[in-house]
Image (cartoon, rainbow over the protein chains, first blue to last red):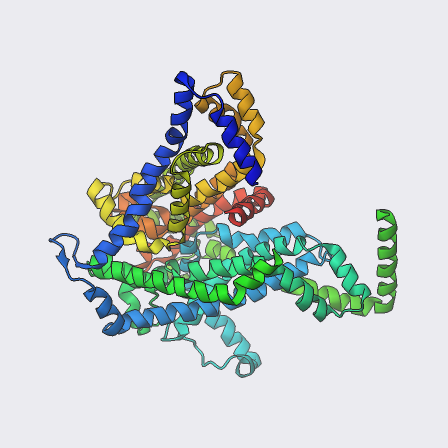
Length: 325
Length: 300
């Protein structure tokens, strides 16, 4: 890798001088400049400007007022909504994240056994939710979650008639899907629907890369199914697991579409703020309350929280993932 | 050698089968297929239900038990909901906005990211390392941090309610640059570029005529990811689009849900119109789309 780079440099520098040499010197900047100008304006500037805004009080129209770190102080020590939203977001990330990966790995494992026909069909099915608009799906789930007329409560009432409900779910019918903490589960279900297949496809790719002779060797040595799975498959899959769970962490912590479409910032008090994710809160602060400074401060705090969680995640899984590579 | 191993394997397999017996094999197959079939139903159900609801009137949607299948006069119901949808939204205008923004995002992002990715991959120049590290650094910042400044910036530029507010900021995408640079480094032979130079091809000509065709596989990945991302995106459009005429489909339908009395039939017609065309394309190209998207995601 390093060698080829050096040789590339030499090859380019060799025919220097004159008009063509000048052109060659300028060319790299010509190629990268359009990108970098755009990048500075639309990606870099917002990051710094957001921090600048977070130190001000500003409603978007009147003059900005410098307040130092007061926004952060208010959020951290005075604002229960902020902490509640952080708690909701983290809890929902786990409620939706764990089933996604367990199920995803399970489906990938089944497909990888090579005993199932129509593998391409099932792969196709697993991947469909990824291409589907989260807004469309959330709107549909909104109907399914109807308290009195929704399909889910109908299905549950049917199960109740058979009499198995008390054994599998500790709930009373009809379920109010967005009553307080129930919102966590109802919103998570949509996320699980959407991302399980995506993770399954990632894991399937990882499983296919495990060399077959490792399994052979283990089988000859008399290893059981469980031993093979936990001692060979899982450790070798660590890099994919680390990658996939990182995605869940980063996107899960910024969860916005489902709660915003399903409840909306204005409707959050109906769920006693249990459906309020931090991303929705940021949106509400900025575009409902016109508190641009406060919203920026919240977004920076969320960024810090994501960085902390990512660090913990890396300490837990990252090393194991690197060992394999 | 390979055939020998295969022969042994199949022998082992046959022996195993004999041991297991038909009942055990049936149970085993059941355990393999059942979860997949259940998941297929779970995934397919919302699409089916979307279709069913789009043909039902207000009264029927709130029936108990809920409607589960298409009735005989489903087309009339669909038309009625469709008319209701058009009464509440300039829906085809919203569809056009979505298409236009998605196509423009895809084309411009492909062009600018391949240009920049090419620059980073082929040349050595002053400040390259710094620029690249800086790019990686900004990639690690969650995108939500930029949402308020994004609005402020678009307001300054006077781009609120305009399609360009959505595709121009997306043109410079660190993920795209990274993806394409990676691909050029690993699969475009430098000798080819030198040969073109010796033959008197201009620097831009090399990029346009030689490198672009060679990197078309990864450009395809990037195009599909960008298109889907733009088509399905909600937060960005919600923030910068403030008038009904400028809404994209997700924002328009989301706004209907926020109304006092929600017309689910009309919403579902909108959902069907926005989801099913993509679904039909997907049915024919699913294998390619899956490969392309996962390739892009794993490399980036």
